[in-house]
Image (cartoon, rainbow, N blue to C red; front, side, top):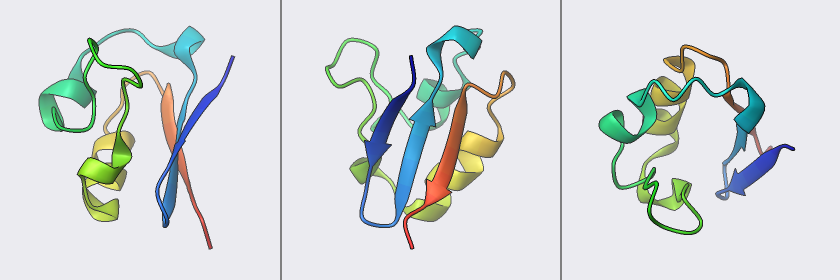
Length: 69
C-alpha cells in the first residue's frame, strides 16, 4: 500500500512496507511527521526544500517525493 500526502508543490510518497522505522523523519521534521496524529504526515508544515532534504535522507527509501508541476 502506498500513501501520498500533497502540498501545492510536492507529493510525499510513503511505502510502509519499506519503512525500517529509523526515525529520521520525525526527528528531523517533528511538525511534519507525528506518529500519534492522523494523518501522521502533514507536509504543509514544512517548506518544499525542507521536505526534499529530509526525504532524501530516508535510509530505507520508504519516503520519496514527486514535484507537482
